[in-house]
Length: 147
Image (cartoon, rainbow, N blue to C red):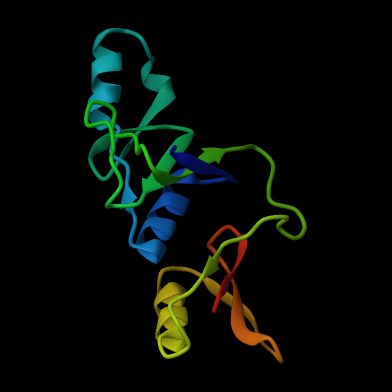
């Protein structure tokens, strides 16, 4: 079984770039599929954009675990992946679902600094009897924790 987590976004390509770097995931390249669909008039140029010199879906971008299989014809991951889809409304309120990243206590500070260099923001540090972690936001304000 494979799965994907779908996250609403204002800029799916920026989110894919951030999370690909944050998780050491591969940003999916759908340019071959899109090129074939454009040539067959199955999609219109209004449905695509250009990212890093390649065709990309205007409203979708995804990242996948680099060790998981993918379909070479479409670039789509067949394992653990995160799909970012453009939506018109901005994020409001606290996330009902979030990711926990576990680099380990010895790597937490370096991981937080690396994520900040990618565009993340630290919200607060939490220290409780059950453990400690850092609450952060990605570039679009989605919360996640670094343990």
